[in-house]
Amino acid sequence: MTAVDSGVRLECAGPVATVTLCRPDVLNAQTPAMWRAIADFARDLPGDVRVVVVRGEGRAFSAGLDRAVVAGAGDGSLARLTTLPPERAADEIAGFQAAFSWLHRPDLISVAAVRGHAIGAGFQLALACDLRVLAEDASLAMAEVTLGLVPDLTGTKRLVDLVGYARALEICVTGRRLDAAEAARLGLATVVVPGADLDATVGDLTGAILAGNRDAIVEIKALLAGAGERSAADQLRAEREAQVRRLRDLAGVGE
Image (cartoon, rainbow, N blue to C red):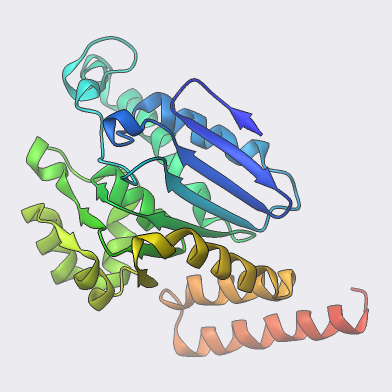
């Protein structure tokens, strides 16, 4: 187990790694220190990890950006970015984005276990995961607009991919709350369950993923993740090439 003082911890149990936001007193509000720690976790993962579960301690997944980060001063403040040249400030934000983008890794399946608030950065963290299991009390919002900011933690493309441009625009520019039922209707939730069943459902889903052939799952994820950017002909070719690799591997045929 890796534990840090930044408000987030990593626990590994065989092929399953769990990233837990552990600032329940502030509903797991996020800070740059947390993002740096989460990005570091990607480098610490054992090679046998296949599934990453992301969860929040207590009654919320994450209430979003810690307001002290916006209003405060010092290294942990976003206001510090305004003192940097634009290119340097953008580089800093790229470092923050790394905490979210590694959850897209082709060799992993990431699952967000969401109860209570998933607001702003919390919503984007859930979106960064491949699958989202929502408790019935989950409440999602892209609330950056209420702070005069934009979503910048990898959430915009994933949101458009899931719900389409027009709906994504409406969600982002209004900052309104979506309950679990609407999230399910829009395709943002893989499944919605009673809060008491959240952990068991995530465990069952994780077990089902681990029951599959790891190399086949890696190929399937790559096929689906790239499908939206390929032509129909290119997707057919990608399927053929992936299947040939699987057949040769299962038959023990070398390169």
